[in-house]
Amino acid sequence: MLNMFLPFYAAIWLIQIKSAHSAALDSFDSNTETGNGYWESEAQGGCTVKIGDGMTEEECAQECLDRGDSCGGFEVWLPGIDIQGHCYVFNKPLDELNDFNCVRFHANVDCKKYDRKENTCSCSGSVEPGTSFDFELRTPRSLLFAALLTVTVVLSTINIVFMAYANCCKARSKGYKAVKYADTETD
Image (tube, rainbow, N blue to C red):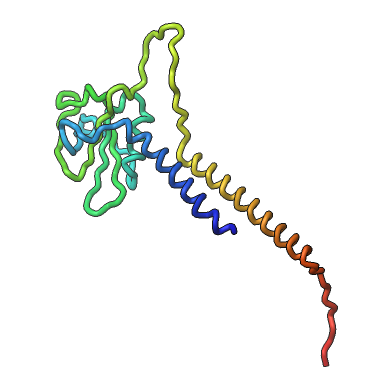
């Protein structure tokens, strides 16, 4: 009976994890005017900062969002046959990503470039009284996964206890009794 529920729990995990990942990437546009490529690195006076290796596009998008308004986009470099790439974020707002501020843009088909969409940055200024806001609660993916795993373990444990109890009750209803075997020696 427990095995019957495992595909269901696995499907819930995948749906939750996929929705957490795609939310970050939805804030970016891959159809950019400059095409795929990268800006000169920060070490050489440019706008590109390396975040890490082995990252997906969704993870890199979240890294950019975590930096607030100062991140105007990112690129994921996928050299050769790598499945996950090298994440680089652009440390200037989108409207400041140009040859003047970032030294130079390098076109490269292996660098999947994303620009931040309009109206995805936080705003500052005065707010009219009575203005309502929509908030999105963002939970770190590792915490979300841990919570889903905990729920799955708890539900699986409840299922096992229930099945053991049901089997015990079924045995009692059929008139089975516990038998104690005596230790006997054989010649």
